[in-house]
Image (cartoon, rainbow, N blue to C red):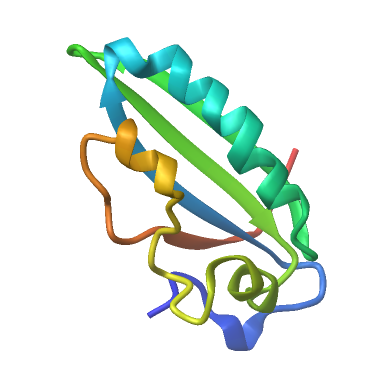
Length: 114
């Protein structure tokens, strides 16, 4: 079930998609490089993609990565992630880095920016 009301979307409504992943602290820089070289170009190639923000932090011996992507529409997200768009999308290389594979992402309607 979407976290936003798709029936009330307007053309100006943007959708944010949020994913979280964890690696060991030792893989902090290597996974960052992988994301820059593999994931970011993949997002940029998708029609309807607006922008992204990658966040990272070291906590308790683990590296946490949060990705917030912004999309023009649900159709654009489905073009990137497939019809099961609420499932997280992973790359084969992620197996060498991630400590677990979170099954779901979260979607939100963006109602304001400053």
